[in-house]
Image 1 (cartoon, helix red, strand yellow):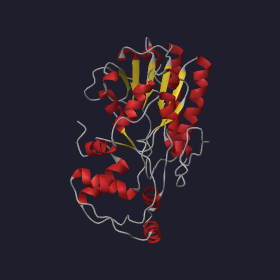
Image 2: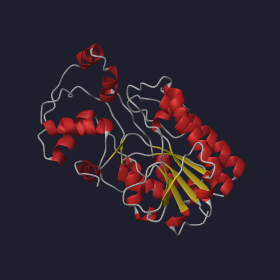
Image 3: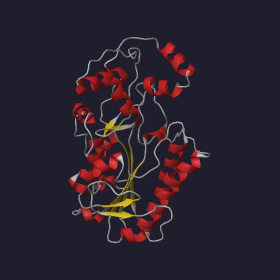
Image 4: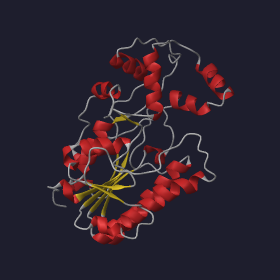
Length: 315
């Protein structure tokens, strides 16, 4: 496809979310139209629409060339929905596919979908990273809904001649981050000894700056057409290393001591926090060699600089 010279040809969903706020600050998206239920701060081009039942949704895509779909029902810990899978499917599957179909009918050329590495599973063995051609292995309703969206998006793309690009990030961190990473930041700020010395895992993360740069690259790169890309900072870390780096960049003292992993697991299991053990001790390695070679791309932002930004406010 021809190079996109004007960001006014781009439609973005999820602009008010963590990733969306960072994306809209990038000059490549300065004049992009943000759509959804919530207006992003400091971005004037916005249209309120519902992805699942807006009869006029197709009008949004008139004279547009690219959709970057970030909006999703995010992974929820301890979900209390009566039927979590239905809740995820309504937004992440049905909403996504309705949006994509309207875009395709309107003549949109390229649809960039932000999925998740969790479609391939929850963990990896040391030295056996996920690769882009690995089979699906979703383990929860969130990742199941993303698998279904990926699968049907390809069908829509093929039927209408719309290029579909799928990006699967791991945990994304950066300025304004929340969730598990924010919890680690809080731990680091306490400057208390942490019993993580026995953790020998390897985990891939991606800074929001590097993810935004990959999305920008995929806007008009000819070799991105109909491809699936894994993304990370291209440098895995053990949990103790990450905690030390968080403390250092925030100006706090760090003390990691050795504590038996088996006792750690038993203790967390007894208090109903077995999932915490998996996140702290488990590995999640990602191989991004295909992404780098296919797009002639590498993560341009340094991990330490991006972690420094985590200690700052987003707005």
